Length: 115
Image (tube, rainbow, N blue to C red):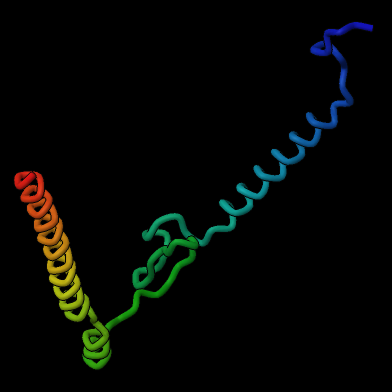
């Protein structure tokens, strides 16, 4: 018996299974590519656009009443106020920690000097 197993002939199941899986993946990709409604916005009608699922969607029109609802839902102002308050609190807490560490170091320094 030979100790060299590199030249041993296998059943070939690994090669066939890889080939079958590769063919299935390529067919799946090709069918998905071929069944797209659109590939770019110009493939759709004038009042439509091509979305991320490659289907043509109507462009939404914002009228006067709808625009007011959208503006009411805008929460940028509240996020800005929350960010400012959070930043101020973080600054205050960090400043207190730095001051307390400074006082501890100065107390240690005074003890060393007195000895």
